[in-house]
Image (tube, rainbow, N blue to C red; front, side):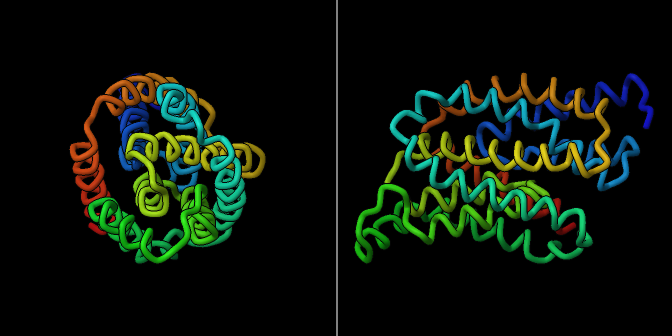
Length: 251
């Protein structure tokens, strides 16, 4: 579809905001997706084009956190496989199921993830006392990342919050290293879905380019900001964004 220059500027600005928020927390789609709907894109076209356009922002976000990714290669290879498989399944569900199928479960999932982020230190203590230490989080984390990948391939808004809740609860890691791992897994989910959508979904490539340029700049800026936030402040920011996501999705 055709958009006016001002509408293109609005989509670009939304891409910048989404890229920055995705690098720090996740849920940037809650900015770009409604913006694309507001300028007239059909829901499915907006969803898949937004997903493809946010991939460059994911790349710059990962590059910005590359120092925190050191030493996590083997773990992320294992969990990355779950993200890719889940994303393929979620992308296929998007093209076959009505959006209402996830309308009830998604806010609940985000709410649970926010609680996991808030109580992460206590959850870690509780889990450490009841299980053997596992550098990769064990099978339950793998299954959780698989489910987060399905959700990310289907819609993707706030998948970062879900991933931070899971990774922070099952891994004995600093929150910034958890956030770096979240960025890479989110990128794998979005990139996998983007490849799928490029072949079998109605992608608007002009919209993709506009969102991509904005998200790439935003991802770079967001990574610079996020790495400087102390853990309590970052935890609080994650929860605030999660609550906003729930309100937007419900109302």
